[in-house]
Image (cartoon, rainbow, N blue to C red; front, side, top):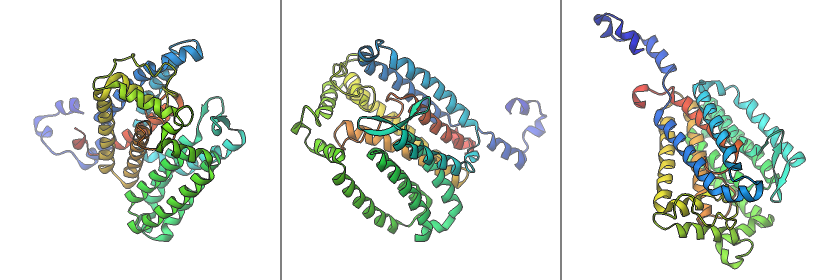
Length: 389
């Protein structure tokens, strides 16, 4: 555009552009570079730390110390490409697709109890050529569905009758997750749904009623599901059973504590040598703390905070309500996953089995996370370009 302006006479260069031309520039705006740079930076650090955390277990379990690293690296490259492609697709494209995507995801969720792969005493995975958790897709599918419904409902969301469709959708998702014994996904999806209703303008008094219902549900769930109650017991006093239910959190705290201020150094963690379970997956952050220390861990948390704040900034400056809800919902999902993962590994929260975005091992999960970042980048292209500079 600048090159074309230089070719015009001086009188035409100083004249105001027509409104139609400004609209075209807005539609073809640049993606938000701070958000893109922060995302790529976190993915790069995550792949490096995943390699450092995984090479011991990869050598023992797979016969190659680079097994997990090579796979995660390929998925990271593919995911960044997907993010850039999705970032160039107008986000309004997903508005009519929200319902079929949600319906298709619910179909996959219903297949899990029937033909799902069982790991760790629970069926949460499907293997359809590639292994993945439909519950991860359900998170972004719910965000798309809520964003569409809130956009069309306008002020009806402020009434009890207007909230019923949202409650019904959430209950269907929760029921399918209960069949999978997937407490962490239930917590995340419930929080995301509440946040989107709040952003959509729902009256605060309904949140009090919803909070009472959620509290009753979790009380019944924890008392009826033995594994959930055992996790709460281990959280309150992990040293009561240091060789079983409390073992993982104790090893996690050892790793975090031994890192000190500056850490043992990259690659020098001791807990990753088969002491700390899931060291390259849900419990990768303790390895980060052990190797990079308090300073390194804080810097990574700050990068996440900057990314989250930028995501909300994009949501606030979105062109329309659907874009704002889409970006706000995905950013909320990212913030919750980071908060719950770090809360669990530091024993601030009971174990929930939530991975750390961009860091934990999992190719399909990383692809989906970068797809979600691409959606936010797509929304950013519709913002005022002056605000993105």
